[in-house]
Image (cartoon, rainbow, N blue to C red):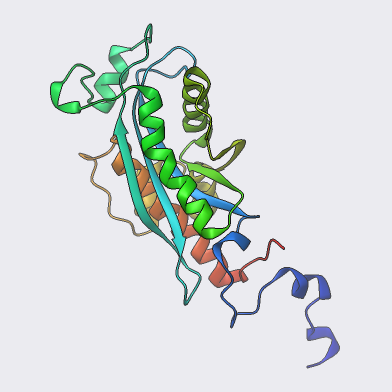
Length: 226
C-alpha cells in the first residue's frame, strides 16, 4: 500500500476491525440503548398525566454486532393525583383513562414494571447506564424524569439528560423528521391506525434507530468507545 493510501493512525485507533465483534457496551460509551415512548394527557411533564409507557430493549447480534429490538415492556398508568388531562391529547392517542380494561397501575408500580428489566439488562451486558432513545426524545425523557421525581423512584437506570433523538437522526439519514415518514423512507412498514400507541411507536422507533446505526456501521465502520 502506498503511503498516500494509508489511513491516518487516528482513524485506525477509533475503528474496530471488521473481523471483530465487540460487546454492546463498547458501542455507546458503556450506555445501554433503550427506546422509550410515552402517551400523556398533555405536553407539560410537570402537570400533565402520564398515561402509558413502553420500553424496547435493544441488543447486538453476537455474530455481526448489528442492533435489533429484543424485548418490549409496557404499562398503562393511572393519572397522578391532581394531574391535568387535555381532551385534545386523548383525541390524539385514543386513550380513555377511565376504561376498566386498561388495567392501569400507579406511577411507581408502572416505573418498576418497565425499568426493572432495563436494570437487569444493564447487569447482563456490563453497561453503566441506560440511554433513552426517543422520537423527539426530550419529550419522553421529561415525562420519565417527572414521574421518577414525583414518586421518589430510586432505581432509575436512565441518564438524566443524555439521549438519542430519532427525529434528528431520521432527518440526517433520510431527510425526514416525522416518525411515520422516516420509518417509511427506511423501508419499515407503517400502519397509521396503530400510531400513537406507546407500544407501536416505541417499536417503530426502535426499528428506525437500529436501521440507522447498522447502516452507519456498515458504511463507516463500528466505532470503539474505549
